[in-house]
Amino acid sequence: MSARLDASTPRDYAWYRAALADARLPAAFIDLDRFDANLALLRRRAGGLPIRVVTKSIRSVAILRRLVAAGPFIQGLLCYSPAEAAWLAAQGFDDLVVATARSRCAGSRRSRKPKAS
Image 1 (cartoon, rainbow, N blue to C red):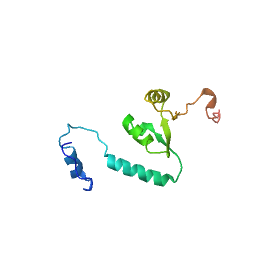
Image 2 (cartoon, rainbow, N blue to C red; image 1 turned 135 degrees about the vertical axis):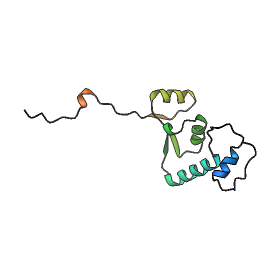
Image 3 (cartoon, rainbow, N blue to C red; image 1 turned 180 degrees about the horizontal axis):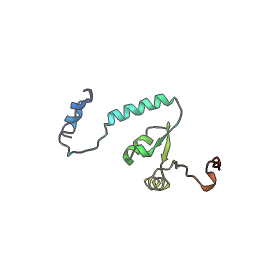
Image 4 (cartoon, rainbow, N blue to C red; image 1 turned 30 degrees about the vertical axis):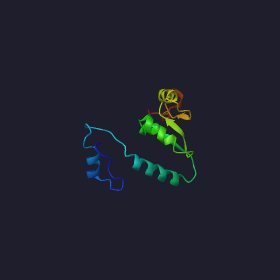
């Protein structure tokens, strides 16, 4: 980004285009002012209940750290696989839960009506 844009300016397409004027595109970016505002809104909406962040939708360790540091209303991370949980543990995260898709076992098949002969 070339120059720091005024945070009070409305954040529309033109604002982001100016902010990314010197960036090599395509580029990924996060508006941290908006991120923090959304996090504050989440805290209010949670009404004192803990929130566990689903890591599948946030693929940045830096952003996950920012979320966890936001306060006690963020209660750990929900990982999509044991491998991801192990990797995040190696990154220093310590409140991890793994959610896996249920698989069907041979004994758990739904009973079917017998075929009419």
